[in-house]
Length: 88
Image 1 (tube, helix red, strand yellow):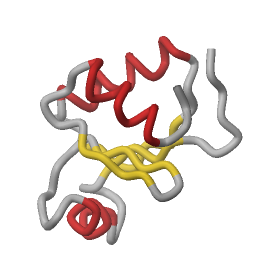
Image 2 (cartoon, rainbow, N blue to C red; image 1 turned 90 degrees about the vertical axis):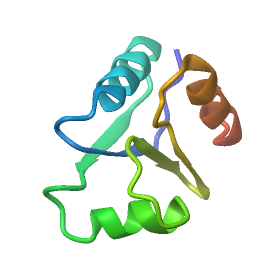
Image 3 (cartoon, rainbow, N blue to C red; image 1 turned 60 degrees about the vertical axis):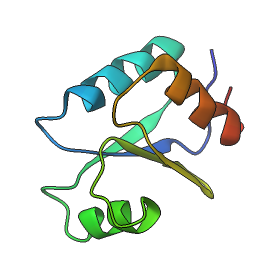
Image 4 (tube, helix red, strand yellow; image 1 turned 120 degrees about the horizontal axis):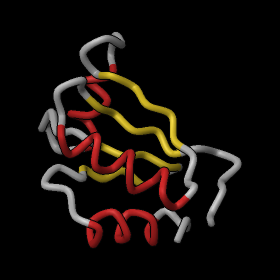
């Protein structure tokens, strides 16, 4: 299991099925994350759009300088993010 001192920030919405899938996958790996619902937190949607080239795409994961949308979730996409973020 990988445990990070600085958790991943995951931008989500309440209705996002990919968000739920990412949460389950991270939980199964024991990887910490902080969830931010972009519909409830002021300025969160703007952060998501900034890191995704203007797209309001969730789930978006951020760790340090690495940010990636996992919309259309797959384990391959998640592992790609974890590798880039140095968490794999």
